[in-house]
Image (cartoon, rainbow, N blue to C red; front, side, top):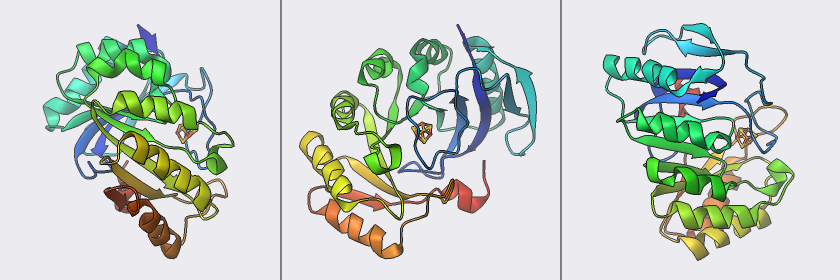
Length: 243
Ligand code: SF4
């Protein structure tokens, strides 16, 4: 099984409740959404080469031709884990659930826990990898940032994901709508009210602006009316200058 892989590197997890843990990241190409704040190049076959970090602590890369077999990718990951103990291997993208067979094969070759970073819109594909993932970082996408309503997909996804260690991340921009946010909180409260919910201010990109401090606090207050665990956590790897 081969896929185009954008990059493989070692860093600290910069988002969500596992922030600061050392993880290996494998980024798969392509996505089914087009978020306004996205910083990842999209499209099938948009990456003829994969960037591989040369050593775990240095931000230097070499390029190898795509596609990469799961066993070759697992070998690169194992090299980082030999160098430094890692808490998890984060499978990210793009949208990694566009590549379920690859994830299952990769998981069979690794003994480190797998963290799936997903936009939370592909429940059928989640079902295929659920037995092999340990942690799920699930986004809930506000329609104002994606141009699409995907509430039904998010609900079905969360129903499946909640049997694992799952948290929800909601990216907020300066122009995010409180009504959409309330709808997201209501959906989570109906399906899994004790779940950890992370409000992540957008890192300014593509004309998307970060929300004001007041907006973030208002949003958290709104969430805490129906949910037990609502935290505000920015993208800390950006602050730290990490990959
Ligand atoms: S879901 Fe993630 S990868 Fe896909 S467009 Fe949105 S931000 Fe980019």
